Image (cartoon, rainbow, N blue to C red):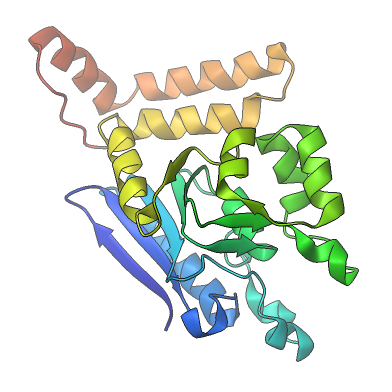
Length: 256
């Protein structure tokens, strides 16, 4: 089937699962299209506030399907909106958590790097081994990695092409939470719950500021931050948040 998709409006969480275990969840055209369609549905659904991306065990994703590449059909692994895997160049507003339980190498690591948060089990591994085959990691991994972890460590990973365990990825800041094998999705759901208690639009605007303003000079960063503040102040949820605080009750968010 390529990709499984489950959306639960009651919890405001959706789960996207790369489902090609017989091919180590490698990305082909079906997977790329499935992820893009799932993200389309998530972005269009006001009842879904956070999503999780995972892979059917025993791996997260081996990256590009080399059989597809060898057949000269690598374009099938890219979509118009998302690029490789329907994700790495995708513009979106809602948080996406990678739940990694097993290997996430090459394009698999690049898929992880395109997500906002990462939960990994202790059997997960990460790495960009492309240099071992005289390739360049062209899915954003080489520039995103140094944004997530110290540049010296990113350089080591890029130039050695070695695989690194989840414990090391956690130490250097790539992984937000470690968990036991088999618990990646459950742990990601708990992280999602910590996000969905908050106002969804405020979460989206805050995500945008972190992504787009962190590396800018303060003068430009303030513009982005101030614009987000102005936008959220015009929402119904802004009024609800203030009123709920005054009433000493939990807020009821509507994402409007």
